[in-house]
Image 1 (cartoon, rainbow over the protein chains, first blue to last red):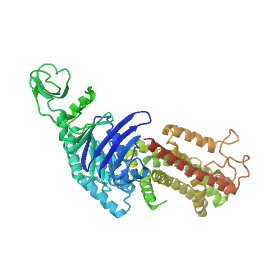
Image 2 (image 1 turned 60 degrees about the vertical axis):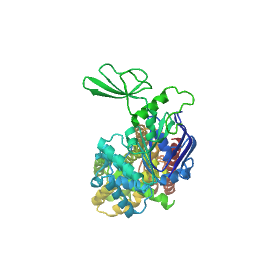
Image 3 (image 1 turned 180 degrees about the horizontal axis):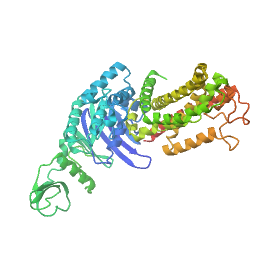
Image 4 (image 1 turned 180 degrees about the vertical axis):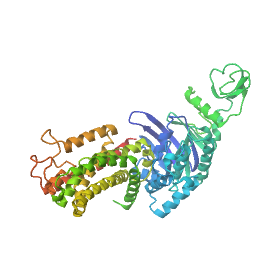
Length: 304
Length: 259
């Protein structure tokens, strides 16, 4: 199920413009949506999930136009959605909650529904605690309940918004692997502000900043945004200053090892380094905040 | 209504019923209220000389004077809770309509809240039947409960669940309790009130118009309460409840469109 977005704009009633003429093509498979908090990712997810209506522009999921009621309903029928903050009913057990969602998703055959609920709770590793009330679940367990409910209707489009927020490292890895395994022939849209999550799961991504798409293309292409701008610097003195962004600071015995993004070596002792995806993301964000020369390319992929 | 719409409504009913019936507050509040109300029966005069329908009617009216307050308050947070627990966003992503959600929530939570009310009524009427040695009192309870109690509860429940879409829950609770005493308990001879109008959900019309119970707050104010007025009152209460729920559905759709 491919997604085509053209000139998508969303302005909330109080005047906040969350999306500004977004153009985006999302192919089948796993697709990452990266951006800082407040970039407009959640609004875009909500529009694609049929929860929020766009103010202008067009968003199509396959043949379905999200500007129409029929289009939104059709998308909801093939959608699995895990919102950023998954609300659950604490007095229901995991099994009851997922069954409740299954009914609302239209799984009407009781026996088939029960079997599907049991199968998915097994898939996410919650079969043994299926009868336990959700108020006793940890954040990670609730996220797993969330992915189980999202998969109930075998969705062609799976939208997960900040799915690893609040998870411990082991659960994050488990969750990412689960998502990749699910991608197959469906479209999985992963929204996050954690670069590592996209790096480990998606071959294609888009980066949003202040309501605009500032990069879309191959994930590996994001590295190019930082090529020639990544420096490593060991110093026992103060932190480097100037037109740079410190990506990391590592205590190294008597001094500190800094990894910085800067257009030129911050000091003569700075050593050029190979960029990582995180460096590419930081370099891209720096360009968005710094004045750009007219016509300057934004990134190695399809800059917008 | 199509089968596709009925299925999510039935599912919502089932789970809202479960969640409401499991609420400790439901049982605690009704238990406390029954502890206050049930002992007062021993002070009723001339029990053995009164007809079974009159006894069942008086007992039910006695309970219906106060317990619908608890019923209304317990329903008032059902839609607010969806916002508090953050379930609204997920629920909006489902193909099931908002109408099924609203009606299923109302019917499920209201049915669960009825359970302790029915038990208290049965306990009170059972005690009376035992005291007078006449099982007919119990037999009268079902039609009296349906006519005197259910329309008022439908009215109270519908407004409670819908009004909190527009009013903060604590403010609604204060206004609702104030309304209840003003519109149902206060004697009309003291201040203008709804107590003796068709709009009173307490069951006055059925009690004094249909069952012809003696006395009551409308004596002298509305001495000619008739059976026809009782039916009008029942129809009005049910009609207003349906209007309130329909309005709630419109508000929910409007809000979703604003998002």
